[in-house]
Image 1 (cartoon, helix red, strand yellow):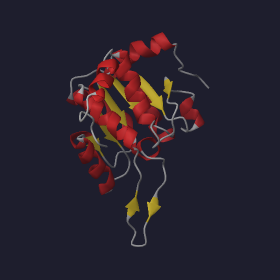
Image 2: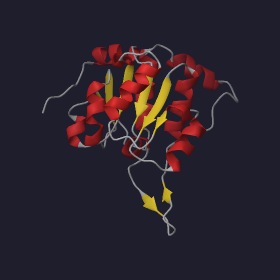
Image 3: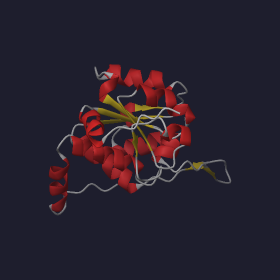
Image 4: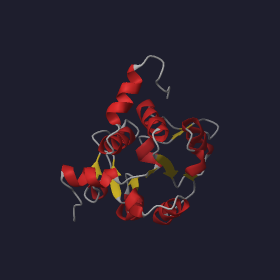
Length: 189
């Protein structure tokens, strides 16, 4: 299997170029579990660290999108809470094409777009993105092919890991941390 592992310097150079981060839902923003209630309703659990990472990244000019095969209202509701509802693509099987659509919407090249996914159906988008990333517990064949493997699992802070990497590469992370040291400045997610 070919690996796309990069040196830290190469990874930072790729991360500096990123203007939009697209995320898979199940296994990336969540732990991949699908809980079904007695009436057939679906339940998902999201991580507050990922949420804070998304709202912080947005506040500092990074666009964040979701591309998912799921169609249910849970995806949209969480996206609305995070302020990214305008860039949610649900019921998508062709994620590479959706990634290109998002890039075109904002006049970006795919080199300026990162994608994080965890399973085989994410590979086309991962291989097309300027920066490809996966949670620590992603499928092995995915981990072998991405540029960055987050230290945390999906739904447990992996998205935050990626966003921090990008914001640090852009040289603004220290200013963000400084903002949060002022009482009352932090977002609640």
